[in-house]
Each structure stands twice: as C-alpha cells, then as structure tokens.
Image (cartoon, rainbow, N blue to C red; front, side):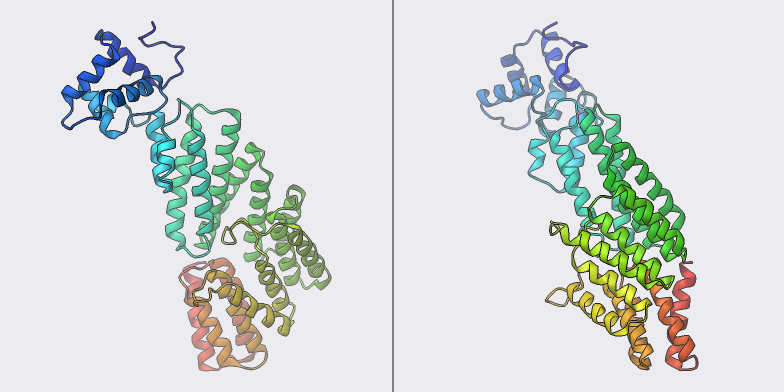
Length: 417
C-alpha cells in the first residue's frame, strides 16, 4: 500500500489522504499538478515549483496554506474542512501561533508531523510570558479574559499526542497561566474563584514536577491570607512554600509575605529576620530578563516590601523614604506609571505618615490618589487603605475632608467585600 492509507503511517492524516486520493485516480504527481492547474482560478507557479511543493505535502513535511488547501479539496471533489479538518494538528497549531502574534513562527509551524511542534510550544512560552508581563498595567478584566482563553488553548493540547517532555512543558505552561489568572481573580475581588484557580495551578505544578509553580501557589495562599487578616495563616503558608522554593523569586516573595505578616503581629525581630532572608536571596539572583514579569522579583520590589513593613511598625521616616523610592522606580522618565499598583500602595504609605505627622490635607490627598487608578489589586489596596482610614478616623474624626475620604473608601469596600 505504498500510495494508500496505512495504519502505520506516521504522516498527518491529510498528507496520507493526499497520496491516497492521487493513487486512487492513477495519477502521477505530475498529473496531480496538471489537475491543480485545471481547477485553479488563478495563475499558479511553475511546474517545478508546484512539484516540489506537492512532494513536501505528500511527505507531510509542510502543510498547504489556505489557498492550496481549498484548491486541493476542489481538485479531489471534496470540501476543505473534510480534507483538512479544523481539529487537525496543523490547523490547531496555526491558530495558537497566529494568536501569539509571532509572525515569524507561522512558517516554521508548517514543518511538523502529527505531534505538537517545538515552534508551537515556543510560541506558547512567549505568549505566557507576555501575559505575565502585562499584569502590572493591563486592566484586570481584560487580561483575565485573555488569560482564560489562552489557558483553554493550552490545556486543549493535552488531547494531542505528546512526548513526556512536551507533556511536562504543557502542564507547566498551563500552571503559569493559571497562577496569573488566579492573581487577577483575587485582584478583582473574586476570592472563591481565585482560590479554586490557585489550587488548580498548584496541582498542575505538582503534576509537572515544577517546584517554582508550586512555590508561587503557596505565595498566593500567603497573600490571600494576609489581605484577609489571617496573619498566622499567611506565615504558615509562607513557611510551607519555603520548603518547596529554592532560591528563585518565589522564595524572595515568600520571605516578604512572612515579614509583612509578622509586622502586623507586632514582632519586629521576626520582621527583620524575614526581610534579611529575602534580601540575601534576592542579592544572589541574576537581574530579571523582564522586570514587568509578575513571577520575577525585581530588585526595586524589595523597597516595596520594606515600605509596607516599616509603615506598620511605625517607622515613619523609613516608610516615607521607601515610598518615595517605590514611586520613583515605578514611574517612567516621561511620567507614565509602569507599576501603578505599587505606586498606589506607596501613596497610601505617604498618607499614613502624613496623618501621623498631623498633615491631614496631604494624608487625604495621598489616600484619594491611591484609589484613582484603573489598575488595582483591590484586596491589597483596601488592606493598606484601611490602615490610613483607621489613623484618620482615630485622630481627626470630625474633619470634613476625612469623613468624605472615609465614605469613598467605605463605598469601594462595600462594592468589593
């Protein structure tokens, strides 16, 4: 059955059918080229070029583009979707590659057999990184929708024939995107969905044998607990993650979550210990390839951690200094906020220190600026803003600008319990 369908044939189904259709008609490859010309509404390349293409198609080394897919189907008296089903490997990979925005890989994607091609996985890695790099500034609902869409595409690859290495790669890619989706769900105030997604990401990390994903899942658990006022739970989650994390960004952030929780429990010694541990870990890490990547910890973020801890500990001068550094490092030279969520919490910190020093007008102004941005992590922002609100309500309860700010904050809080 040299020219027929063979169960042991490892070419794509459409390539095997191409040869079988030709053989069934008793055509040579040159005859098939002449038939293509007879059915084409457009001028085709030379016979030599077409013959080279046909040989590649029949061997399954490249897949015809949309024009030739339709022409081949017409030549053999069928419809394109029957000859080249949308669920076929080439079509599915093409959709993934086109969605990734990597135009140069669209050609490479055709050099594949029936399995997921390396170019497809490369495109997905680039896409996952892009999504994670858009976290600091893209509207959360928009990024969440895109993240969910890509998560579905990635997990659909599990229905394909994969090598063991590819299987692990796909699980890891799904795990990273699931972590991102969980963060966005929590940012938007959907605690239940966020926890479910976090657990799914942890499971994917475990199945893939990817310790970094598992460690970040624990970091998210610590973050959730911290912003919900469960400080002991945050410490427990961070300690559990510490057992998994090695020396990557997750280990640094786990140390930061411990420090922030201990600060709220009033244990300065533990705060300093945790900060020092995180500082040493971060010092040993290479500078991130992209400081916007949500799951990479850039050096400037350590100022952000320290700012939070020293604000809680009442170290006003240190907190204010770190807040100014955070705003500076998170803003482009042209004045555009690169990391608006960090800036918002830095504004709250400046508000708290201003309130403690008796400058109510500045305190309220900073507090309001923090609430104005479109890109918010509501649980974190509300946690910090409540600290400012408590300071203002305790010391200046009857001032009109204070009551007005407290009402604004109350409205935001009630909308996102």
